Image (cartoon, rainbow, N blue to C red):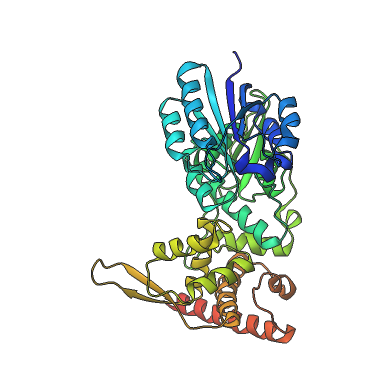
Length: 425
């Protein structure tokens, strides 16, 4: 089968920092699996002193340099020229399957959608921004220009939780074990910017192995890895009212299937990671502390608004530094911490939210109490020991050691009382 053809178009002036950091070469490596890049065009005003030093490098990489003269100072005319050229190639060179468009600040969603209508696959390339969050939904894939390195635990765990949720959701659409290549393809169809390397994993299968609900098997006959749930279905924290299901006899396994060896759960995960796993199972999403502070300061002065209106207001002010998904995640934490006053708008019966008049430390304290209540309940249900030091690492607020122990003890006693009340009824 002949290799698929790829066309690449780069707006250099809107992506100057990316150009300077070797972005085009990284892009070529990233998309090399798509097929043969038969068109490589880079647009810009090449007399620009900031672009001139990179002409040789782009030429070495095989890019045709398209000069755009700007009759009006400060106006970038590359956008229009690129759009015209892209549509010309789409109509004239029918064998091009993939169009890769690297730009910075323009909304090319209509162009992307038109290319998709023509049966073309589209890769968008750009920085993290409010614009990219809307544009990427029109792409087959989306590649961020920033080299993302999630260093703090909260950011990394938050991103991992989102990715694990997506994997589980997509895996449920398969009738049985899923070929890992097909699984990833479906995931990218939903989240075009998905990339396991940004989470610190060298490969997709390595990432899947880190999800405790997923089991990886190698099929020697098909020479491929397959993913399935490690249990009959994705495990949830079981209510104390529910009866434990009867154990089922293990099914006979095909001789062509080889389980990828992993250690027992207790060995694979530290106690802190086990706590994080429990929180993910009960739909508690950890969020970076700085995100909470930023959003808290923005919405503190907002009037009664619907949840979607609050999200829009925050998006306007954070300028792409926090995604809409992460904003909703923070609002969910505020809600679970009972930090919103809720009322109903008479005209359309919409639920309106208003942040209570609290200080920053009160905010963290409320969220921590809500988290502890859920975590300790989950630990009790699953027979997991309580480790004060490990739990402390999950808290948002700053507490004295004795006050943490007292807080945990009080909440644990309440969990026990609630459980006894449930049993009585």
